[in-house]
Amino acid sequence: MPQTSGNPAEELDSLTIFLHFGLMVFGVLTWISSFWAGDYKSPHHWGFTVHKMLGLGTTLFLAGRLFHGFFGPQAARFKNWVPCRSDQLKAVFEDLRGLLTLKLPDRPPHQGLAGLWEAFGLLLFTWMSATGFFMYVFLTPGSRARGVLHLVKELHELGEFLIPLFLGVHLGAVLLHALAGDHRWRKMFFLKNPSN
Ligand code: HEM
Ligand code: HEM
Image (cartoon, rainbow, N blue to C red; front, side, top):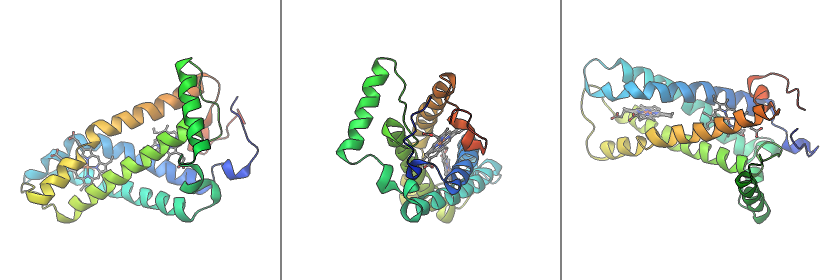
């Protein structure tokens, strides 16, 4: 059973869940389509076109989540959950120590190691959206990327390794919690969580 603090400021609000759903659908499809995006150099570039449109969808949901993180309700605000304070960092280390002894973190959403990893995910998707949006504006399909555009494209390609790393750990944690009887994934699909 997950620990519940009883503090409503730690419950995920419905806009956070809706924005997460958008990130989940568009983020994963954008990543999958990226394997065909390298055809931007050729006169026929359907892979690039599909990736560009899906990437724009991801960018919109991400911008919504960032706005919500600065101006939304207390539980969604980054200052309340991105681990920076010493007590929050202590919780991250406690979770890491627990994992070494095969004990799963058992905290409300956003707390401890989960909060750190979720913050890393948002940072990574911000990076991918910013560099992707730069290409959306300045890359002319059918020609090669040169100069600054080439550099931005190389920086964008860091996602080739970092996105599977983020998703692997994020989904691995969700799966391990589900196997341990904590079905918090259900609320991210607008379903009732029987563990609460
Ligand atoms: C198949 C894909 C995904 C699944 C099944 C999934 C599942 C989940 C679940 C179950 C939680 C709640 C964790 C908790 O209660 O502590 C969560 C939270 C979160 N996930 Fe995902 N996730 C997915 C993809 C993504 C993607 C692509 C991102 C991109 C950044 C992301 C970022 C986050 C963030 C930031 C949170 C914290 C809630 C918030 O503040 O928005 N997730 N996810
Ligand atoms: C906003 C519009 C976007 C545009 C115009 C764009 C454009 C591109 C282009 C041209 C490439 C091919 C680079 C090459 O192979 O030489 C690429 C690769 C890639 N894109 Fe995007 N992108 C966008 C958004 C995103 C977003 C939001 C993500 C996050 C999921 C993403 C993830 C990736 C990944 C992981 C690669 C590397 C694929 C690989 O090298 O195998 N892109 N993108």
